Image 1 (tube, helix red, strand yellow):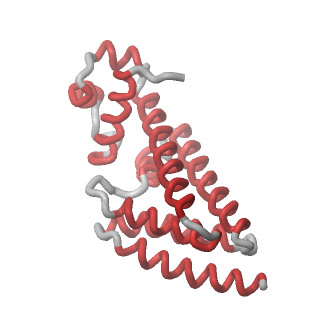
Image 2 (spheres, rainbow, N blue to C red):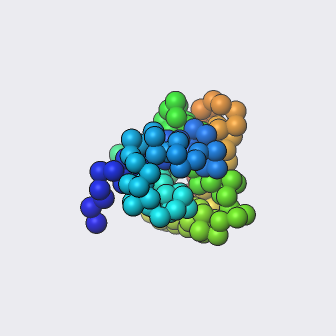
Length: 188
């Protein structure tokens, strides 16, 4: 389905504002003004703020999935593909716009009052765990490795956001190397 230019602009603008300020702090009038659309157009594209939030989460999921997969595909070996997860995080953490994982942030902000946000955040995290599981399997690692690496990646995202430095990516990568080496030795 083709997305209209105003709709795409609204979602992009909402994503930027929600990332910078939080979802609840951004009102529809602020979003309308920043996106350069009329209130009528805004509500014509999205019947509610919650529908905008869900569109932003879909955009974030697609961006995360595409970016991560592109980084992983550049790695030449199954082991290197597992470590590429942490290299991707390192690049993301260095971006000026990095404020932590949008799914963790939206779940923390709205998960208790919005079942849709909570469900989407869970589905996003489950898809990441399946992705890491597939990479682990391709590397010949035992099943216990994938959740360990996923937890490292999730913890690195939160740590980097709170600490305000990208150091957590390198630290998590070092820990991942230890876990991968141990897991692959156990399978030998």
